[in-house]
Length: 584
Image 1 (cartoon, rainbow, N blue to C red):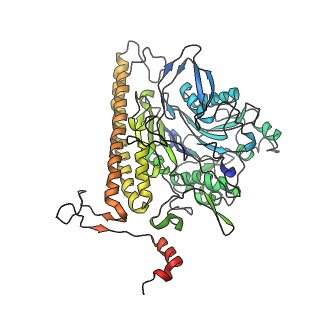
Image 2: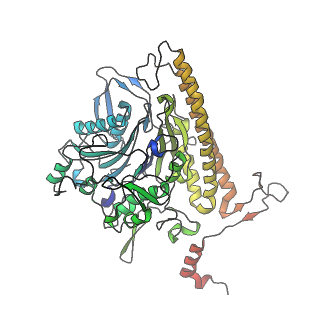
Image 3: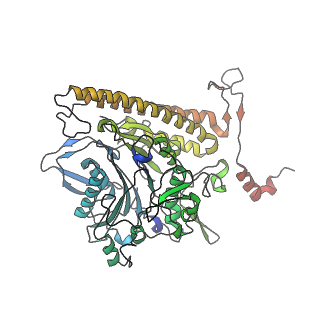
């Protein structure tokens, strides 16, 4: 996610410590690395100005001469109108009915290559490709064509693109004012491996003669030479080094998040292929100096093989990470306050006595608008296989709920127009999740465990519910196919009737909407519960059945505790003011 009012990476603040305050994170998982054989992409759309809602575009047949208005995703400004295609697919959020998924993170790159006169921004490219394409390769080509035809107006972008068969990381940047084209490279994630990116270009050297696994602009190297960004051989050319040179901020504020995702999913052991194709394993801490911005030469690999098969829950919990257990752990230093709060309010750096310091930027952040884990499941028909686990606000204190992309409607709590960043709505998921998260921020280590237990219980329940819904929907699908006048094969796009699987869509719509409504109502009740239980720094005791412990004379609590502050906080207070506070 980028906002044009937030330049990015090293341009945001002056000095060597600068890095982006508007930033996103993606994790990419191939079907060979996943527990259920699905391709997965996670995405946190992080911006202080982005409202969390679920975009919805039904499939449509268009007439010749119909036009599509292009509006810039970040600003809502009208950019241009382009001819519509004959048919568009249904999209829900960042996934379509053909099981295509697209996510992104903005890396910025060289500022001289930005062209705000272009007519196609990165957000429009994503959502147009989702409406028009059925495969990852087709989406990549379509996005390049859009940028080339109409001019690219955004900064450097990394995209995650997945379909039923393949997962790709795709990076591009414009050519500067007056040039419509883009330079780009796309690499297929090897099956059985994972990838991650977080606001820093990650594709370095790449194969030039392997079209099955790598695609790129014909002039990607020549243009770098023309601009003076590169002088070496074709073989040694590195896309990220030429177009998005590293600095401290790019490593510490961005690459650190990708490193942390790998560290969690690989259990501290990075297994990858070296330049000769040999598999190598190294402890993740071999690369910690790079992740912390201290040593550019210690770059960790683009793809790694996880230590175990990855579930949706594994990926969701990675999106809740605050560097726990690493040197960058945000819960352990005095900046976490007296209750181990793993957030630092902006700005992202500060000066003290002439020296510059950073506030860590973890994967989980208070500024998230919406986030998801999307699954493309090749063993299921498209109507069932396209599954979006969707949530709003800070991932660490918000839930994901499953939305089948064939749904006929969006749950009210996620609908576009149900509130915005300046308009509170009591029926909006974004607003109730912000109420819960902001309640936790005042006493995080005391209150957040209650919320996390609710999240874990819900997501475990939904994992079982999805498996059951898949089976029931598949039975309906097979019955519909058997009843059709002409045999309908799974994932066949040339169906005789668009309503052939109406009962499947009705069933999965009811499943998606009812569960989203239920967890929204649970979160309304949770916010009220947090207020009652933790009011004024107190903690009221409960019985094993969940009832309050009282003195037996009405609703008067009988067991109230005050947990106090962390030892780190106590030590800091004593050092700062102990002479005055000491009991004598």
